[in-house]
Image (cartoon, rainbow, N blue to C red; front, side, top):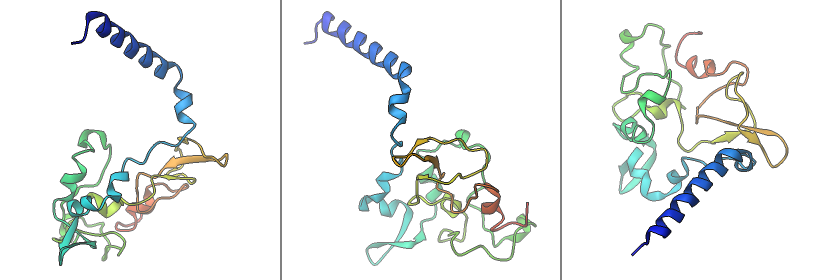
Length: 174
């Protein structure tokens, strides 16, 4: 059984640790943050996103409803400006600015619908030495002395034109 003194000591230790984290945040920022998608390297997670054929996950085919899987961690209200998902680009009447073809590196799900992974790649780089958009601030220094930036797992971006290169892959020039 835990005594009152032990509980008090635990609360004090937790309080001191919290203060130290707030006072010395730079110590943690000298290392790049951990890849939040690292769990996607585990084979048991493949069926959550990929269609299974012949008992194996097919890396080129995505399951319908994959966006719901993404939203288990990413809250809609925290996404900011984003593209609608679960729509079919083939239904061109919904968006007149759409080009004739969706690029081959922008995968759709088995039903021909856009998903989060149409524009993002869960297996992509988390950090890059190149900016994703012009006003992006670095996350921290690399071991080589340069800076690193979050990629947001975008399939396309530009340090000069930002997200426009992603959008213009399917839509008329913005």
